[in-house]
Length: 311
Ligand code: CP
Image (cartoon, rainbow, N blue to C red; front, side):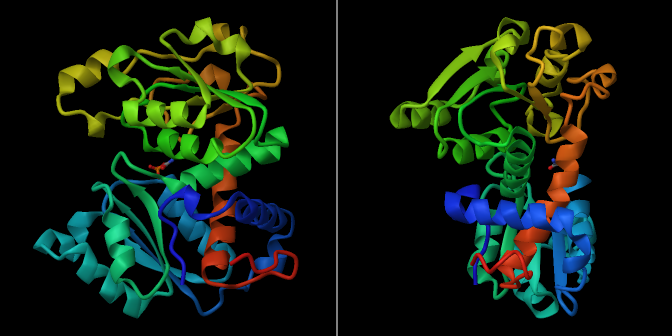
């Protein structure tokens, strides 16, 4: 049995196989429509979500399986004080695989340690969001045709943003990646991340103004300033509108630069940008379904005719 806690749980070769399977599922939906018949996915979400929870559920339904779960800790027995360890032991009696989101870093890892079914980390506090990272990598690979030789700008909340931390950990395994970290002083990339990059010899620069570097980017990964991670409202209000990607700034970018965003968006990308062919954040959300379909099948040890068993 295998869990997914971090994108690094898969080797780059296993990721290639997972992406191939996801692309095959996109092309041949009908081939996989019954592969999970008789299987159940539990979604245990102790924190709000639209995309991650619903794309997991859509993925399992697309595969012919069934879903159960809760979307709010207050409607589960966590509200009565039940531990994650006890909850997962019970969920293991009801389902074949579990996707768990939790505000506490490491909670899905604790669950995995007590589980008799595969557990997928669907986001733990400011730590990791591995299935978002798999979604991002699949989007880049599918639309750019490669995961190497890229200059990547990450913009917004780089301090608390678990999606950017997970993505960087995954991308440093590819050749010739250069990062530009675009953030206000208060939301800079944590030093443990920049130290890791220095140790690996990966090039990065820290920049405050998006317009100072957008012309050099192959990929711009925008993020929201996350109200829920701030300790005081004043700091959030001061920083929430620091960046706005609009048509004027986008006019400085390369014609083939991709704009990704894990979503939800608040104010950081103007809706006037949505129709630009470079804006691929809604296609990214669609890729999130295919990668979760591939992941569920892989962790359950199920194979498609074309996909092969990658476990
Ligand atoms: N990208 C993402 O994690 O979105 P949700 O919080 O809506 O799941």
